[in-house]
Length: 171
Image: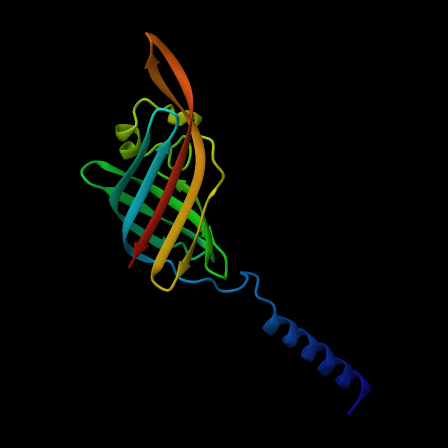
């Protein structure tokens, strides 16, 4: 074997090994694709009231082909629907960045605005909606705050209100 042939073989071996071990798309993530029968729990609480409401929704999600990114829609009868978008990690944890129309995740949901019209959902403050996919069960939740307005002794008062959103769905 000539020295030149041995060098070429060594270079080919290194290049072949590099191609096999490098995956530019990253590690695989769980497939979120499916239709989820979902229960959404809403909670608002302040010095004047504490309310807990439950909604039934259909959540239709699909993997976009870009590992970890998913998109879809939610539907709540009779007339509330909107987009859903998020990202998932290899361990099944997820972040939902879009749930309903703008201005923010969750804040644009018609069902939310209809149930609590005295709250200013454009001012909803909350961190990202986080959750997980375990087998065929998807769960996500978030806590935040929103100003709600009440008539007290003839004047309108803005009241700090805590808000909770949690959803669990199975496909």
